[in-house]
Amino acid sequence: MIPRVRAVAPFKLCYDGSKVGSTRVGPAVPTVELVLQSEAASWVVFGANSMVAAKGGALCLGVVDGGAAPRTSVVVGGHMMEDNLLEFDLQRSRLGFSSSLLFRQTTCNNFRLG
Image (cartoon, rainbow, N blue to C red; front, side, top):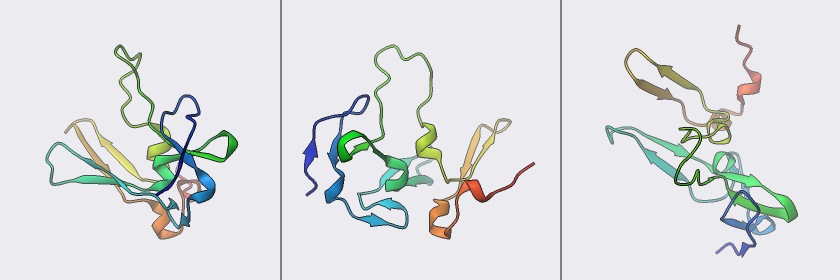
C-alpha cells in the first residue's frame, strides 16, 4: 500500500511519490476506467494521466472538485487527455479516443499536424 501524505492544493488525495514505481505509462498505480454512455466503450486512464507530481515529492490524484456551482462544464481535464488521440464528432455527438500513445513509445508532441 502506498502511504498517503498531506494534500497539496488543489488536490485532495496525495501519496508519497518516492514509494511509487514507474511504468511505460507513468506511475505504477491502479488504472481508472471511465465507462461511457453505451457501456460498450470505456476509456482506461493510466498513471501518466491520472497522477500529478506535486510539491514535496507528493504524487496526487489529478482530480479537482468543481464544487456545487462549477464555473465550467469541463469533466475531463487536459492532463487526463494528454498523449491520447481524441476525435469529437459534433454532428453525431460522439467521442472517439485512442489508448495512451505512451504504449506506442510516442507522444502527441511527436505529431506535426497542419
